Length: 264
View 1 (spheres, rainbow, N blue to C red):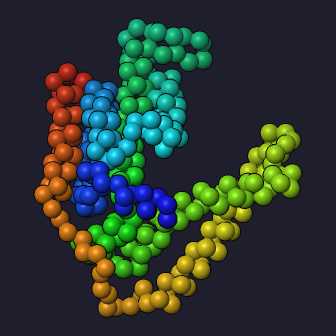
View 2: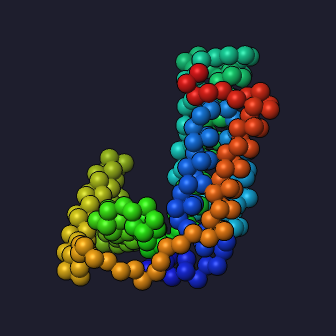
View 3: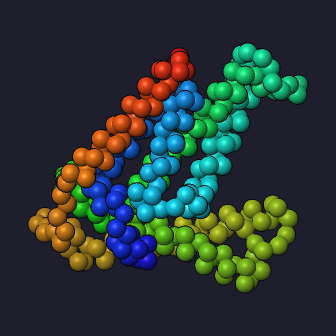
């Protein structure tokens, strides 16, 4: 609820755009990045995406707070790719069981940058999009079934609650002396137990929410809307921005001679 209130109080440019326009822009960027494995197109898209954070009312320091798991996963993926890829060019590092060459390092860096460039638009989208506005757009503009839309809305609203629930369960278990000490294996078992507790809580909360929504008539055939989902000139600019980022990434790779189709 606090996140929703803060979002409605945010008058940044991207928060006022229609969610479907933002989804379409993210799709165009993702499609362009999925066609190649070079590092130039990924770098071009990544730099442009970072410049868009202020348009969503966000500061760059917030990037690490929200995206550190994805950043870490991209770094590990790039390192793994550099190790297992076939050697080409001069060998930069050789420790016997694995080696890194110029070609494999370039491939690993490209993989890492591409992962970040694909993940950042999704983070930007979810940060500057209100779940209720998204549900209104999916139902009114995309004409998706009401049950699917309401399920999506409920899931997005419950994500924040699940994070708070995880902390609550963890503090309760530590108060009982569970998971706060012991060997790594014991700590792992405690974490699995905490995960199971969160799963039980999620099922209970979802069941109560489903019954409540059904009792309040959310499954009815006739429906009215408190807020109408509309398109504006801003949505056209958002869509054009996504297209320009995708085209710029492709042209930069082609211009530098690094463009390489992923299936090659």
